[in-house]
Length: 427
Image (tube, rainbow, N blue to C red):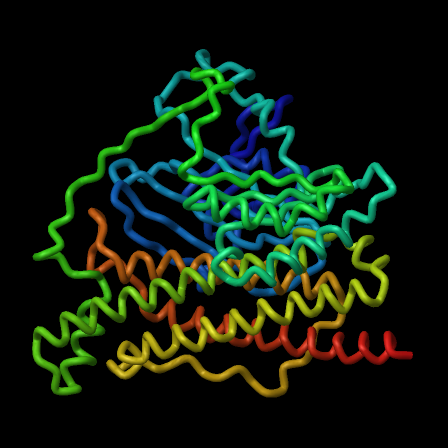
């Protein structure tokens, strides 16, 4: 294991040393393939996927712990040299979650005499990154209530708008809505809905449209355009990685080859769409439960705001459950192709008892949904790196079952809190 410190520079620790991944020390971790399994401590949770130019090692933690916890980790290795190209670590302490990203800017083997201490200085731009739980309102406005009002209005606008607009809390507690619409007319309709909330001065609308003119006040040097040329894909001769499983199952239904090809295309589109929407709902749940409100704000919420908070969570959990059920139905041919379908969650699952446990559970739900979305994209779409040997159907089944259990426990907890809240509010 390799670590870096300003005083000692790069240091090699003994092979049996366990990495210390805490907020104060995670930045000193140097990405290395050899110690990736020791980061997680659970080799059974590691997965490997072949990318176009290398390999992606991934880990998702489902266990909950109030202590420093690694939520997820991704390590990308170069295909030719197997050296680390990038790594992302998501670490949680208490109710706060931080993401650490390591990216290779260049690769060159240098003698120690040419390595400068300044090479490891932190980018000043990264200092401005903030965690959503470090919200310190500076004025008399109840910005937590404002955030709930914004989320409620967004919910009333329907899923089409919800998929475009993001609601974020800034370090001063203010609320910001961002998103890009197809037309300025669509944008203006949404701006009109949120206009009454702007009177407080704590709501910022960063909404744009694809047909609006570019901002000519932005210096041209600040606009960085990157053009990447991708290798062409022969759609008439290439098959998606999940084709063998789907074709084997569909052929048993007595369909012709042409009918099987049509059905595989339909299943791929529908499953990928439901997987994307599932991922979005998991992110919404995580943001409402963990990202948009601090623990202090949740504790200080009046009863009517707590009921609204729980109602919003319940709405997105129900949407998540519908997308998960649709995804089960889409992948039924894969299950019937000799695989074991995910088991239903046990009925004895207890509800979560603390806000910290609830928040950590939504973090795990979001991380697993993100992993599932990546696997579905790799298995159901064509790319220049698609390879029928480089997908993991078994991991998808396991993630679906784990997501169902996690969602059921969250819904049971929200239902219990709604009953308690309604009872205390009516009294």
